[in-house]
Image (cartoon, rainbow, N blue to C red; front, side):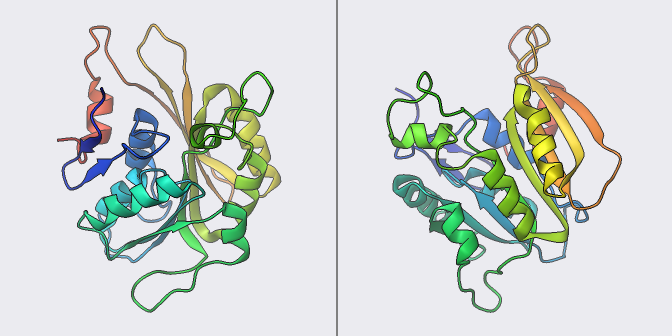
Length: 253
């Protein structure tokens, strides 16, 4: 039986009630994503939106990195929102993260009310998402279970995610995602149609003998030269590579 929680340097993430467990994708995006014009550590107060927050892992990582951030984390699934709420309340960052159970479309049409010095509405300096990525076909989805909803695009497709993120993003903000490598170019094309332009990309593979499986993409509203890198997670002997250790060292114990 897998452990019901993961302990990080400054917080613990429980995932026993959540359809999608803590995984490498979330850790990577939480460690990699950053506000385009705000490099940590920063005294600047920034607003962050985590779309499909799951356990709250990425929100917690960003709260640790940006000590003056205010974060709204949303998820459509009841159990995920409950689990994320628990993880936030048991963290040092509970006064800066608000978890809301809602559909992204409902959220964009009726953003939450805020109070001074706690949470901030749009526009956001940074929007992050580890979104559903399996296309909705009979061969890939047969139920509406929480795990299916979390993994498939039936509730949040790329077009919807991109369009509404573009509307909520500040003029100098960053929109960052992690998606399968083989759909990255299509995602980039859709983003450009909504005036979001790629400025950073990191292609990810498990080890040097494997093909690239994931891509982390960061977009902004101005056209810039794209900074492209790659990351190999493990060495041939299955130990973590120096690049992976360097990226995640502020979070892993």
